[in-house]
Amino acid sequence: MGVYDISLQNPIVILQNSPKINLDRLIKKLNPKKIITDGSNYKNYVNYWKTTCKKQKTPFYDTKKNGAFIIKK
Image (tube, rainbow, N blue to C red; front, side):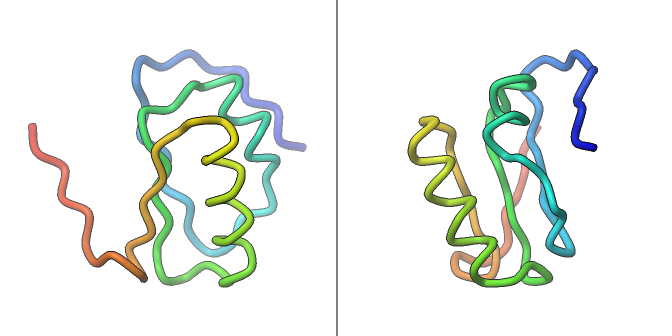
């Protein structure tokens, strides 16, 4: 159903296997630090998510296009 009733501080959201989500709603609810997609997602989904992130001013990273994303602590 896509109801996100959780509270996190600066989450990083990783989208895999082409989930059917409302990214606008997820961004408004979670306010993620970054959205990351991997190579398992459909190309048209990734393009749509990238556009959504740009409109919402949320950083977006596509590992299929840009390579591995390394999180440093």
